[in-house]
Length: 249
Image 1 (cartoon, one colour):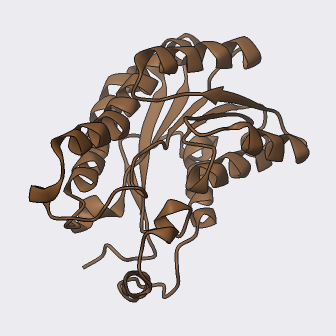
Image 2: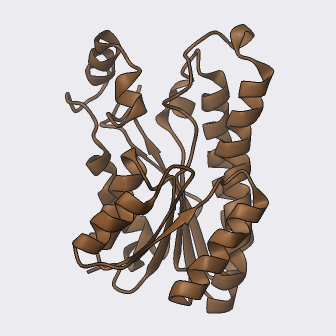
């Protein structure tokens, strides 16, 4: 139980990879806050059915009032915040298209969720972590940044921003005992991602990897638990690629 009694917030925790994160940290003893614009209650029910504690919070991470309420409700229920997993992002519903065809409004919405969301959530939890003298923030980047994936330029750019955000915030929060790291997954078969990709592209993703199989949400849980636990206490500012070796050239 590497996360026994830790309080872990997972944004975008209701479905897909976020749901796997929630179940994974709960299995390691964490008390989990499932935050999402989608209904978080089914994931909370799953966690509770397995004997762990969980809290559902409806939250749009691009709205400051929502992120402040997320922190307030977490503290009211559990009294502390040990880990923030900045997982919420727009991706699976985005249409793949050249940058000249991306509506400006879509660009702005991707940046609002994928980057401003991290900024607002980190600001919301920082006072509690500073008061405790420790904490872990785990941001979710993407292998698309390392590969320069085309036709998703807003998503790829936002995830490059996550890497920069992680490095800068780690510098700022290190003196308070707060570690900030990131995970960069490869293409993962999960929810909207799986529905909106052709079989040809699925095969191409597998062929580009050293490990010749599809990536599943569960493939990311071990890295998250490591970064959330004491095992990574002397790590900060790092981005860990978890993509079956697909980004090595």
